Image 1 (cartoon, rainbow, N blue to C red):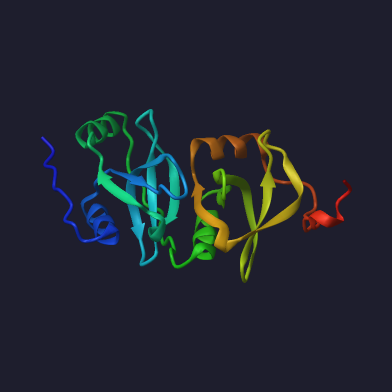
Image 2: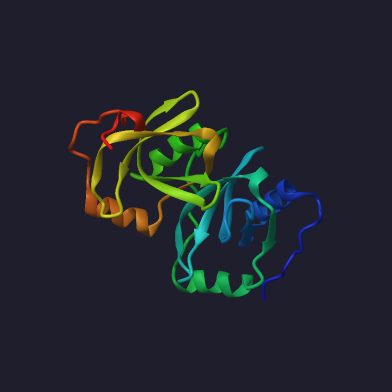
Length: 204
């Protein structure tokens, strides 16, 4: 039987560290940014960010998400921890930790994610809608923004690039089944890249 070790009330970062060291499945809430729950294992941790290997509803690992610790409103040990651990083991699901993943800032996270997977998801915070995801390949890092060559929902590459401000980022995801499927359908982009025209320059 699994021994459940309760977290000590020492703050979110300390609880994340404890869960990271004990390999405990968590439920992570970011109520200001997103109504849903991040479910999974912390696999990397820095002063300001954590990387979570997500567990999907089908009890299989389904990619990774990097979030800012300051955005976490609460965390708890998964109340179904024993079931989760047994289900993952029975399905042959092994926890994989990305090698040398840098969590210094959003730019480092994006670069590390691109070194691990062919596509990343930049999840931008919109005032009224929470996080909106933009999927593609990182092409450039600007002082205050990440430049992405994007895919549309039908796995077609846009011919231009878009810059996304670092201060608007809520999280960065990669390695999920959905992103893998997009990559399989889309393949490598074939069109030349162009900077996205400012909105005022586009034809209305």
